[in-house]
Length: 84
Image 1 (tube, rainbow, N blue to C red):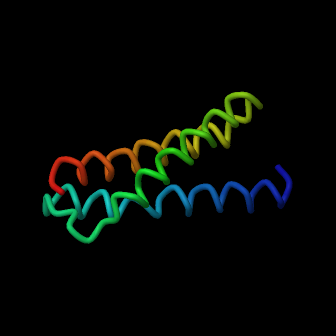
Image 2 (spheres, rainbow, N blue to C red):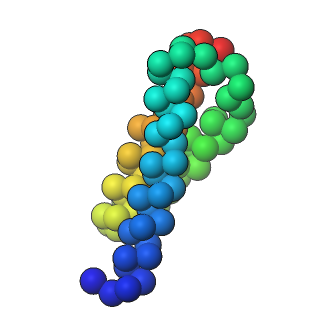
């Protein structure tokens, strides 16, 4: 694996895991008052498009990172819609 691949992998891990604290907090508190609905709608849509792009290219790191991101952003959006 080349150094540039390590940079890309590290970036994917960081940006994917960045949503986890928000998921945990929203799940525990059942509060999403301060979470922007519009932002998470756009984020889920963008992640779906990135995932489709990765599938079209058969780029497994891109697929994996965006699949996990979609679970996290989708969870936050679901909690926002459920708990407002």
